[in-house]
Image 1 (cartoon, rainbow, N blue to C red):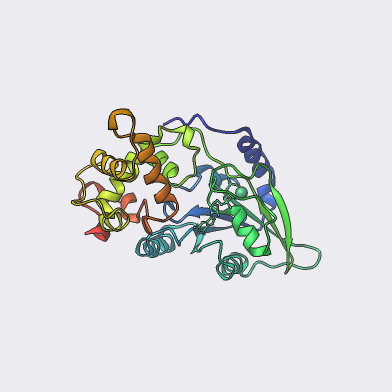
Image 2: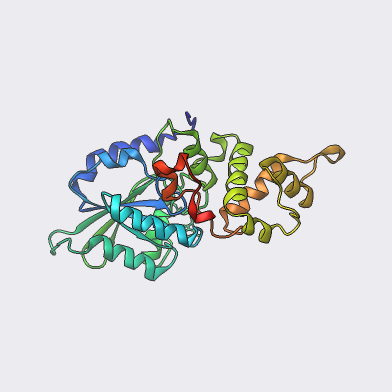
Length: 289
Ligand SMILES: Nc1nc2c(ncn2[C@@H]2O[C@H](COP(=O)(O)OP(=O)(O)OP(=O)(O)O)[C@@H](O)[C@H]2O)c(=O)[nH]1
Ligand SMILES: [Mg+2]
C-alpha cells in the first residue's frame, strides 16, 4: 500500500542518519509497544552495523500487559537487539531504559557516549528526552511528525542524546501493517481512509477485546457481530447522526479511534508474536481464547 504522506524532513533525516549513525555508540529504536513489529522501520537496520541496538517498547500503559510480556520473551529469543518495555512519561522507567542502553559502553571526559533515539513518528522519542531532562525541551504532541530536526542534548554522565524526527517509508506492506500504524497514530490520518482505519480497529476489538468494548460502551447489548454493527451502535448512542437520522459513520469512526488512542477502551495490543508466526494461518491466537 503506497502512502501519500512522506514529508520532506523525513528524507533529510534519512540522509542525516546515513551520515551520522556510524558515530553513534547506541541506537535506541523507539517502538510502539502495541505494534512492536509493525513500528520497526525496516530501513533502520541498515544505518549502523557497529552501534549497539536497543529496542524500546514504549507506551506500555496503553498495551495489553500479557502481550508485552510475550514480546519481551520473543525479542530475547529472536531479536538482534536488546529490548526493554517502558512508559516514557515516567522518569524512573525512562532512566532505567537509558541505563540499560548504555550498560557497559565506555566513555571518558574527552569522549562522550553518543546515543541516537530513532524510530517512526509518534512513538515517544521526544517525550523520552523531556522525561530524562525533567523539562519540556522538545516539542511533543499526539500527531505524527512533530519533530522536524534532530536535536542534541547533553545529559549527565558523559552522554549526548540525539532526538530525531520520526521516519516512515513510502510503500507499507501488507495493508494490515499500514492500518496498524494508522490506528496508533504513527501515520497522518489524511494518508488513509479514516473509516477504513476505524473498521480495522473495530475488527480487532470485536475479535480480541470484546469485554473492554462492553465496559467502554455499556449500550452494546448484545455485542454486535461485525464492524458495521459496532460503528452503527456507537454512532446511534453518541448522537453521530446526519440529516434524517442517518448514522454519520465518519463521526462514529472518530469516537472509536479517539477512544482507542487515548486508552479509554483499555490496554489494547494490536499485534502479538503469534501474528508473526507460521501457526497464524492454522489457528487462532491462544492469548485470546
Ligand atoms: N500513554 C503514553 N503516551 C505517551 C508515552 N510516550 C509518549 N506519549 C505520547 O505520545 C505522543 C507522541 O509523543 P512524542 O514524544 O511527540 O513522539 P515522537 O516519537 O517524538 O514523534 P515525532 O516527533 O513525530 O517523530 C505524545 O502525545 C506523548 O505525550 C507513553 O509512554 N505513554
Ligand atoms: Mg519528536
